[in-house]
Amino acid sequence: MNFFSNLTRYDYLIYGLGFFAQSLFGARILVQWIQSERQGRVVSPTLFWVFSLCGSFLFLIYGVLRQDAVILFGQTLSFYIYIRNLQLKKFWKQIPFFGRTLITPLPFVLLFILFFWYPQSFQDISNKLDFTDSVILIGSIGQLLLNFRYVYQWYFSEKVKESLLPLGFWIISAVASVMVVFYGFNRLDPVLLVAQSMGFCAYLRNICLSLKKRQPA
Image (cartoon, rainbow, N blue to C red; front, side, top):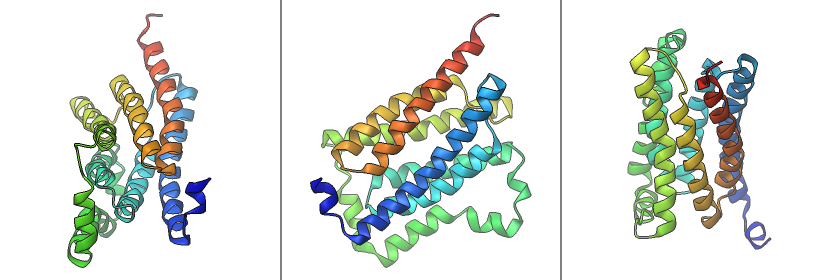
């Protein structure tokens, strides 16, 4: 109760942005989950990556406002993996060239603005990245895993030249979500708490679907 009583209108706006970004991440999982249940196997729909890209940029802004280096690093990496998956899905070229030109540098434009126009905020973010703090270390590893899963997915997809979501992706997701929930609880971040708690259920279901497919008929 103390946490909510100390929030300002500005805090509510920041959390509102964070929840909206996470709602896009939630929508991608929902779309992927529904289509996977219909087909009885794990699928990688184009909408999953479209929602991912939009949510990633908004969550980058949230990370700047929260001065959270863990979020900033993770989402910058993921942003470009989402673009690569849209290329593999043959959707990226359907976006007009002007739109692609605007979208591609967005994370670095955001960091550039932060560094040159708000150097104190940039310094504050750097100072908060203290890996001797066990909570920050666990949260950083969790966020790193949440983004490494896309590196793993990217590698897997490049091998077959098709956008896929393999079993390992969901196992990494489940482990990382537990770590980020712990970090969010200690950091008093309701956005991370709610998003990763809900995501954990979808990750477990996809693990079940992946294992079911591997079982012999």
